[in-house]
View (cartoon, rainbow, N blue to C red):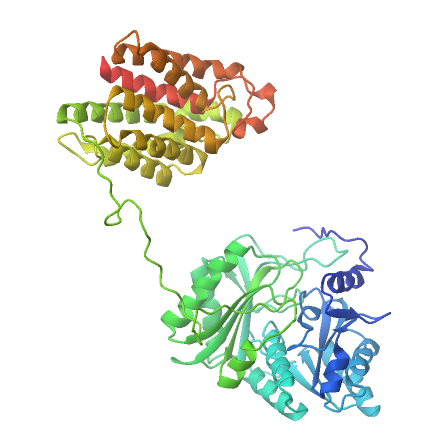
Length: 588
């Protein structure tokens, strides 16, 4: 990981970050010549006689802390340089702004880092000397440390946001400074956090990451400033990782563990440290809730999963647990205008979070009362269709390497593999001729069965296109099965491909072979038998497929490839030619 950042200057990045925040959040204001963000309606807080809240720390943890300024949360946030505690003068500026002429006073919330304790403590003492009413709580909920020796204490991590929310709600309710302070400290004492990283972050202006994690390793128990954790562990699955993290957090042999037992009510916050994808976060959230509720027997009444406190772009997470009581739950649910707080959604009438059961699907191929039978054909005709399907599948499987080779020029080299995968599954489901597994004597049902198979097995655009083809074709085989209905089913299938796929004849796609075969079959039926007309159709389809090598690609993945590289026939069109020829060979 490089130190590459999209900034203007390293020196001004913190200031411009704050300027951007207040630009898009009109409820926030930036105090001139400082790195202090304050509620735009701060005077209404003073007039109402409500306790004000101030927090802050080094930058690089966005959206913390300025993102939590708003009614129901912080009144003011003070930012330092990246990973550096803010200077006492800026903190004092913030305290004056929210505490002067406010008899209710201010609670200062800080994380347990030496720089924060010293600088915020110094500003607090100066504020008191000026006659301001202030108190402080120090958040230290890190559950990673195992040593029983004297240390600097538990670090403040992502759980700090819980304290912002609880203290902010209590202040909004009109509680006194003493009450807000005591209940905030109670929440701190009943909370734990454990962090883990797949890789380190890099600070603005640096040339690389702050520490190195090997590709097959993870760092357990790290803090928020790029510092290494308590130990390196091997890379695991999400489920295994969540278990290791929570087991470490609750291990009584660790001096900083959080005691939890079956039946405890907790709030859980799964925090993105900056570099995790939403996909990963959702998987981790599922595994976390399932382990807490299913394996440990906890009652997770509130669950949160998002980016709350980061370490720049660190690829990692933290998991925070807070023991809940009615007061804390009420405070977590209270409204706030802070832009970074995400509300956990509950179902209608729910007071506690519940993991929803899957809903029963409506309709689908297996739903009772949804089946339309369709017209049937004789056993002999069904046997012939069986032979056609079987031969088409065998030919497509045999053509796998040829089609993949063609696709390596114009796509991602998997056309043959995709077609072969679908053909293999159809062949397996087809079963024995004497007792076929597909509805070969009911072309309407057969078309829908083939559509379902290719859609679920082939995947990608090929699976979708063939599923469209078979699904649309089925509508013409519902009431009767004749030569004309077979022709119309082909017409309907091609029309669906054009409508939804966007391709036209001549665009260098599978449609070129299908279109040529359909047009020829339709034109020859007046003068030939259906079998002879189909033979001519197959020849036309094969010729059109071969001629795609001279066409300009105007649809599909090949349209993004340089024309100079497209010297061979389109693999999708060639696949159509393969199965058309297989069908004809069963008619001889």
